[in-house]
Length: 364
Ligand code: ATP
Image (cartoon, rainbow, N blue to C red):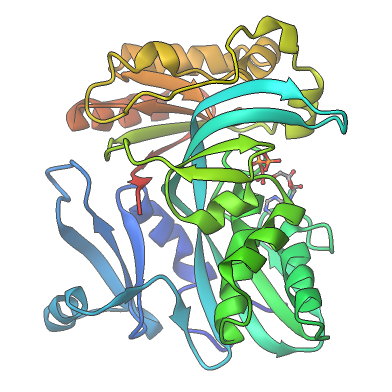
């Protein structure tokens, strides 16, 4: 067994659930002086511009003085100790997803608007190891060389032509096979984390090339901004017309394999051309609404009607838009009213066997 409880400050396994709880309401931030905390900067009047609990190694709540000091420090998203690195690994949602064609190799070409959200796994890298090893606390995540994080580390060392190893501990908070890109995000976290540890030997372009070889969503997680992705997902352009909105995320507790969804997708049922323009998604949703859909719902919702129920539930509770993310089954609601969003979280928690989160969009 290895993990953050060995040789690292006690922020890994032990407290991650607590951190995850807070990340439902804010953006997890790591400071380069060894502290971490959560900043909530969206339109929740309760949390606006505030930094809620900060922790130091050894689980001390940081003093007010340190808290003020940290606000003025340069922020970094990595927490580093002697031979370990902690990398937050966020989920994503697809605010729009259109399938525009099928390639001879069987892959589908899509156009999708995608944003990271404030729901995080934590990836801990421990260096100076002889081989690559993965440990994850989720029973459905493989710990062998099929784990995307393992593959990312192997590709990184191969690119540098070195025979090094790393221990990778993944504290899983993002629901698995849920359309939230957890595995791809873990892979991107390993790539950027290792590149940081080794003194940035690979350029962004080289990292992107490796990412593309690992999976269609991995380049997006390196991109670190909301983006319109085209092709099989790796062709990215920034999307700047998105403003902070409260997002209520509802995840039914079953898994949907992405491959199965595309295999059953009927291209004949879609009727938009390739020239797709996504309207601005600032505060006024009404004009954008008719353009926001997810083509993959035609497959997943047909097989799992519960998804329709969740969408309707969110809309009835005031969501401007309720859509399935990726190949599902997770559904998110975008709210323009923070109080309605707060109520929706409570109500959805009482219904069905679902996990419900309130998360911000990560816009930068
Ligand atoms: P996709 O990226 O295929 O759309 P998803 O985002 O819906 O998938 P993931 O949580 O990435 O879902 O998991 C997809 C599958 O990948 C899982 O069934 C799991 O067996 C496998 N997998 C491999 N590595 C990981 C990882 N690090 N985290 C989660 N799942 C992983």
